[in-house]
Length: 362
Ligand SMILES: *[C@@H]1O[C@H](CO)[C@@H](O)[C@H](O)[C@H]1NC(C)=O
Ligand SMILES: [Ca+2]
Ligand SMILES: [Ca+2]
Image 1 (cartoon, protein in one colour):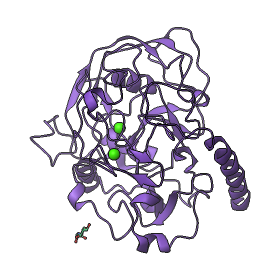
Image 2 (cartoon, rainbow, N blue to C red):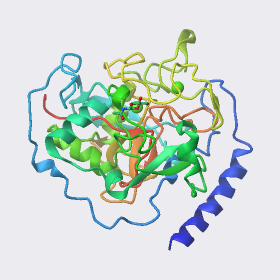
Image 3 (cartoon, protein in one colour):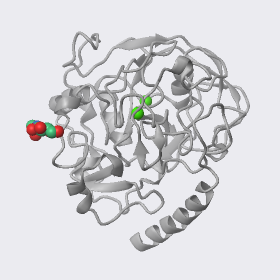
Image 4 (cartoon, rainbow, N blue to C red):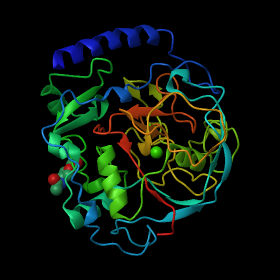
């Protein structure tokens, strides 16, 4: 089984390598049909199913359900500030897909009802509050490892690793890597409490949101929120990646995967709120970390008008949105509102997090 899996990955690797040769573009704007290869983020499947099904989240405990508090005033709380997103019509997806095979198109009319959304990606501090209140154990902790981008690992950790993801060799499964040890056993989050939590699986994200009496956003809600009231734009702030030479998101500058110049100030995750908010007051919708959504993955979408769509009833992968600090135009042109990618629900990685929404004020 495992061998077949790696063979498949090897084949994928060749395909990706071939397609890459023609897809390494520059930094120039606007949308182009290149960038097909992606960051390999969707290749992060666990080689073998874990022993136990980690369905027993302790979400029922919902121990400390406290009234919503301002994030800034209560850094210790597990519940962050939310903002009201007024419902309405929007055009979901795009007819000029940056990565057509991701199912970014066709553009389609969608209505979403009003909801509230976390202003910020869920932080390490908030996740720590959840863990302390519930004793929840994440999937990465149960599996004993998680995927870490090679570029942020020290030599000591790297030297102990013998396998990699063939299709995306810069992803390494690191023993002991999890939300509180983002680069493995010897790392910690002490100086990163205001960074987004990473190494959380889809179920982990669901468990957190549910503890906070919230839920994950649907893809439609997420994308509507990302657009911040703008129509048919690439980014939450418009069509130019760097208006007036300013960075609006934590992305990758330089040559992926070998050199990250950190021109935007960060080569790894950044503290949440380090870049400007969009029109709805939401931070880091694109970049910093990918964000899980509620929906199962499909690349086939109806162009019929939809109201509060929730994606297919079942599937193998969940949709994630927004791209991460690892995204670059030449390689993972997915830091656009219409862009999307997928992971198996049990995946966890050093660039994947989430935020919650709710229909009622929390
Ligand atoms: C956390 O990591 C830093 C280095 O990144 C180290 O100086 C510090 O001692 C660590 N703290 C704990 C509690 O392990
Ligand atoms: Ca960056
Ligand atoms: Ca994000």
